[in-house]
Amino acid sequence: MRILIHGLNFAPELVGVGKYTGEMAEWLADRGHEVRAVTAPPFNPQWKVAPGFSPWRYSREATGRLTVLRCPLWVPRRPSSTKRILHLASFATASFLVMLRQIPWKPEVVLVVEPTLFCLPAALITGRFCGAKTWLHVQDFEADAGFGLGLLNSAGLRLAVGRVEKKFTAAFDRVSTISEKMLARLAQKGVVPSACRLFPNWVDTDAIFPLPKPSPLRAELGISAGQVVALYAGTMARKQGLEVLAETAGRLVARQDLRFVFCGEGPGKLGLASLTGQLANVQWIPLQPFERLNDLLNLADIHLLPQKADAADLVMPSKLTGMLSSGRPVVATSRPDTQLAHTVEGRGIVVEPGNALAFAKAVEQLAEDPGLREKLGTNGRNYALSELEKESVLSRFGQELLSFAATS
Image (cartoon, rainbow, N blue to C red; front, side, top):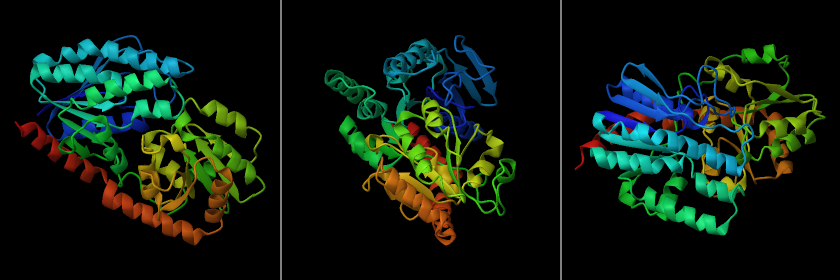
């Protein structure tokens, strides 16, 4: 089958949407499908185009049955609301004609990954002209999150964007998203239930697993065997509410047995670094390459997962899959009725968003109780094995894709 993928983020990005879209494309190509991906050069989470790639030139990469067509985009050094919109629009504009040029190739399925909304028209037009089925996969309700987090605040703009989003979203033959709560939200976007599918993110449980001995990163970082490590690793953006990490570390600075390790990149890094610069119990390390990801996740005795209340059920933190697969408990901030809270329940501790005192108490509780850490971590690992295993999730998706393409 010929499959055309359109999305802003793609491999070799190590985190977030790009990681999952890249792995999906590679998996489909490895199973004999002809796959083309129209995307941008890697820039996330650093908000800087990676070395070896150009932000201004078109390029083509071909490996086996997978062809990657990279299009220019503008990446602001300091993203603001307006700059983010221009950033997204730059890729949608640059990739529009590239999408139309795929019509003679006659893809059977055109699959677009949101974000970004700006790419939806090109995917729909391409699909209609070549007679392909169209599939929208929502990783992030970006418009709702933008308004919910205060990045955009015009009531008139919200109404207009909502109408446009509803019109385009409902026009796809199939719409999927990554959690049950986000799936329910699709009805508000005008998508009929028969067109909705759950397509969760996954984890390679063979690559991410509990190590039988301490992570080698502990010795490299000078962390003693008696210290408990609370780790935040991943993208550092506004929707995370990262300030709770700094306040938590500050509340627990007197505890010599507890070390906070922060690892990540993104627009929120500078602010968090400034808040924690004087704290002796905080240690910063750079993003680790993929081959060291399991060592990084096993560095944690406790994983930290803050998220703002206004981001609830608009996004599902992609980093959670690896946390659970590593067999370590999670301390998350989320309201009780959210998908994140339901997923972490029994595999960690959930507290109210923005409540640094409760967050600190949860960290302290787990730091003092290795038996509880082991129990919750084992529950998380078992959940990853039964519900999030990469081959299982992608095999179900692959079967769904085949039956979808075969329908009249």
